[in-house]
Image (cartoon, rainbow, N blue to C red; front, side, top):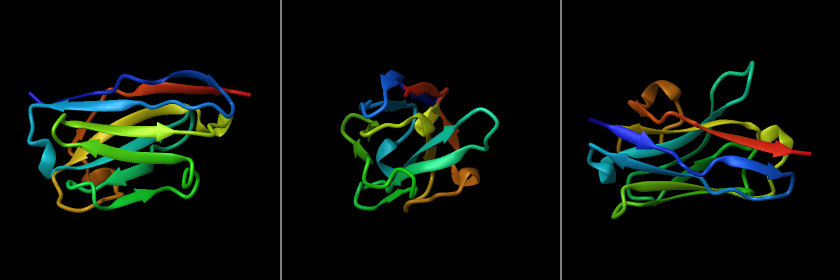
Length: 124
């Protein structure tokens, strides 16, 4: 059974940091592209960051570039999202997802497995 578990959300003031992680089980993590998405109320789910199976390639949405960092530890079957300089527009439910692809992918429909989501709330 495939599981993606995402602890690490929470409430933070503007300018603060959070570092959610996503632990995968039930699949061969090292061959999966991974992504972080977010969805705010009334908005569509959008890509935040993505990383290739080896970790050698990454992608960031323009809105988070320079503030967020995606990384992975294949030995621990875990992907991380370091979020700095948070602002209220970053408030959303954040989801990690796994894609059975060998390269970074940005398309929601390319992802095969999804976590349950973790709430990130940034207060002004």
